[in-house]
Image (cartoon, rainbow, N blue to C red; front, side):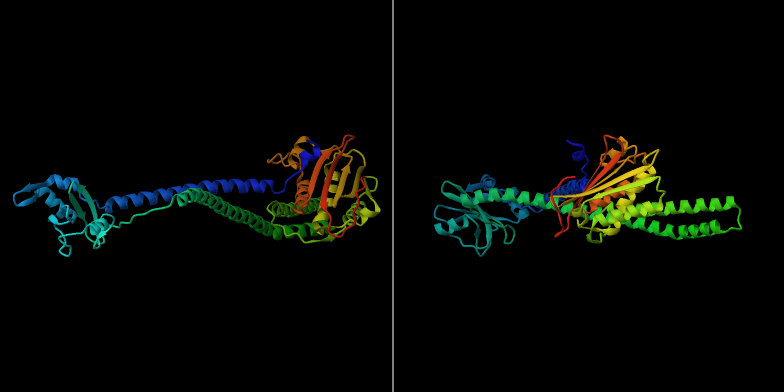
Length: 428
């Protein structure tokens, strides 16, 4: 993979990793909670079933407890007590459907039944009483419960429907799994967004609280610095206080901007802007404020490049080039004049901007950090370059950092052109 390929950074990668981590944890949590709830529901259903289950007295046990005498059938005392305990009844029918023995049989039931009536009661109920039957040769034992005690129903399904049901149940479980995952990731996304917003608001609140006393320190320091009645040493100390206060103010501003860009909380005020105009304006500003013998900025933009238009936040784009030039001036390590070259070209609806200096180049540690492969803070001060990277990525662009073979460092930025802008396919 080329250096440019390795340097491509997906701005949302770390955010997606965090979302995936929280989402995976949420999926595990929701699945575990669902399993626990289902298990509790199943156990509760089993407990209720065991506590409320009503069993028929077995017909075979009744037949064993019956004794045929000259006066008819006689039931044992133990089985009679069980009928009382279970609140059930029974009757024995002969081959003609006549009742030849019964115990606790409801008075509304008949003493003789036709074959069709016996066939109907064999499936469900006898006049509303749930019954169960057992046949012995030419006799039928009918065991019944009281009304509204047992629900009975014969269920039948066609084989095609059962095949459909087997397929559907798999789809049902799959849909449930997807639903759990989607729900978990939705909760995770909301959690991470709330967490990120809380962090941004906390940083913004702290920054706001610091600005007021810092402004007072800067004001008093400036007053002392300008007071000619004070000793020169005291005025120099006041100048140092004022300068460090300005540095602290910039740090606070960078902290706010970095956090907002990292968590996509910065509202970009996009408009159609010409990068060439911004580059020239920033370059002229630096050249006017510096000693000519110490800084050279060479801007190479052809006629068509001058008309290149992108949709971007003008102030943030200005910040990009100011930070790049500042980094080259402060941290380039040049022993002679600082030479900076800025080029702009168009290719396939994209705007490419190359920034290059003649400094010592980036260390491996800084490149790893700028390419997003190092999470911990780098030793060098690259706060300004990180802001450059996040601004470009927040605009949907790409950015690469590297070192030139002949010495110095470079930064290549790619931005999408605005609709209707001029473009060509010429290379540098």
